Image (cartoon, rainbow, N blue to C red):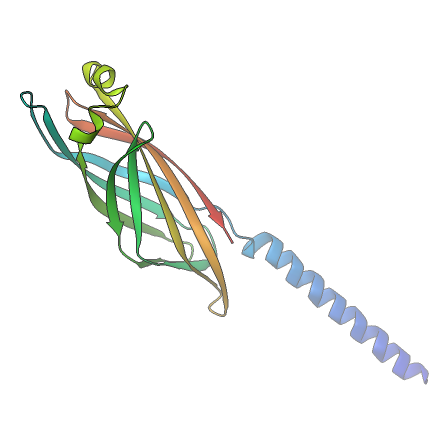
Length: 184
């Protein structure tokens, strides 16, 4: 082999190694999937009705959740259902329509949840919680979808979200704290 050919092969190997290192660094810093931030903008008590004899309670929660996507890829999720439970007992379900969360953007998801409290009256904690003026619920939802990175790399992804919701009966308002996790 001539000396010029050896130098050319060596230079090509260095360029390829440098490109691979640069691609790896970019992937590990910029393109590495980050957890979305899910924050509850508003949990409002839209309606609350009740009768004591016979005991009949219904409440409707209006929930607006903002999903902040810090990733360089958009996330398109399918239709899903959010579930609300009261101390482990199913209390309500809410439909979430399919949509897309833009890359490095924020997206609001809103829904109304009708909680029929009649079924919860038999729960051990209900009387004590109602007397204290605060009903504690937990909502959970799973978003299955497709993450698109730089418009050419498509990955199946699932976002999990859990929120603790406190409904204050006397003041007829609500508050919540949410946690989320993204799995590729």
